[in-house]
Image 1 (cartoon, rainbow, N blue to C red):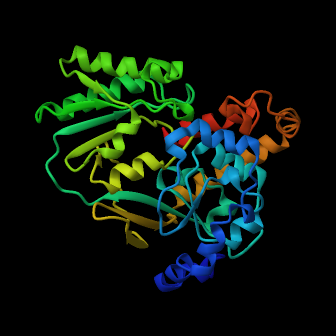
Image 2 (cartoon, rainbow, N blue to C red):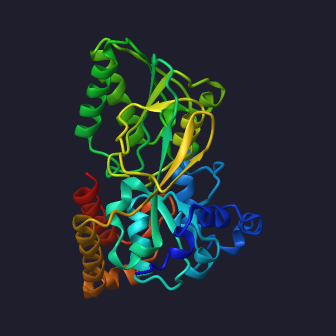
Length: 345
């Protein structure tokens, strides 16, 4: 039985041809053709700071909260999206059904369990992996908190403690680089939440007699990261899934410290740099994956059918453009976080 994405999936050649189409790539540079360019979207990008910066990719990359319509999204298909659980699920709520049989979207492999059943034929997943094999002697910690739902204090403590144990034998030098909303440079003026988590991480390092050097994110650009591990504390991938900073570090030789190995066969592997590669996967057809996608779809339909939550979302108007909550109402944020905890935790 054919699927909606068969024109792209039938051969790697057809996928690569569409991906590298020079006319599409040239038109995509004019964001007015596909971006809503809303104040809410621009503010979300500013809040994500360095994580939302553009980076080179063989695929056309975007955040789904930026798009003006499904038609515009499909026109530039295939596209690679960098959304976290919140805005990915909000996209599915806003567009319950695909409208173009040719549309194809790549979402980060970590978020594969959040794709509803009706959208499965239109999705692949991707991961960026390191090919670097140099001995490691440096550890970069990246605290960047855009809200308490990015990760729990307990997760921070347990993860940093585990990282220190892993790196104890090699006596890694430890560097901490806080990334605040809207690219604030001065460590002393970081958002309170990021500052709190940064201090917690530094305290754990000091208590373990492994003091961490604190640097500004602007200092990263001049470093050689061959021989480094990095740790981005993004427990639920709630606000973003793949960031410029992660891509930059991978492209320059760094490796994730706590990388979740994916042993599934890749549909396609594309080199990105001497140190990194893009791996693309088809969605699993096992019964568990299909059942999860049906559960996500039923949850989204239940939220839409509930007169209280659907009314709150339809009537929602952003009141303060200084917070990430402008994307959707509080009830949807709670709903998305519940699903992220259940399927991504």
